[in-house]
Image (tube, rainbow, N blue to C red; front, side):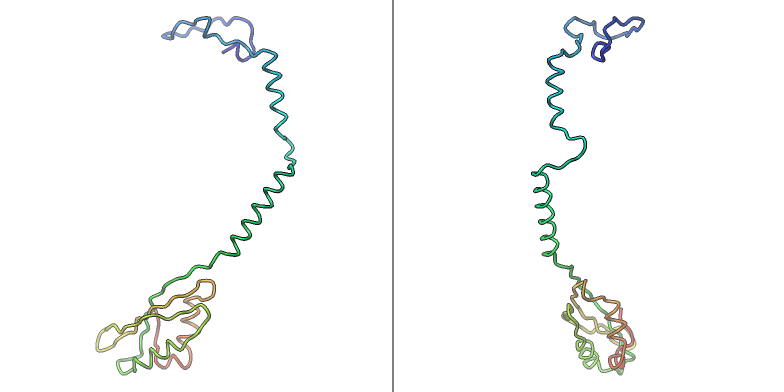
Length: 160
């Protein structure tokens, strides 16, 4: 190990017990001048100052164009929502309630199937499926600004 690191003198005072005997073949010799010259030539390929070559600039531009094209094609996410619409009381006309809810139209909002689910004491709630495009429609905004305002709030008490 000493010879590999460039020390040419013999090592002394270190004893390693339980190791295999050292043979002449196992002793490493320092690299010769010819191999050092060959290694120096390989260093020419490394640019320490980070200057880009023409090929690297073109590759970077192509990657940027690919990322930009991919981001344009990216479609915003869609969500399926199950909305529970609760009426004021058991005398609320559920058909009119459903018509009022379905009358809400927004870009990115698609109403789906619905059913009436008994809650208790003769009261039923409307459970309706809707699909929204996340970038265009917020469920909170839909409930607060559309479903619980005039004239729909005549039928709708609350939504979950």
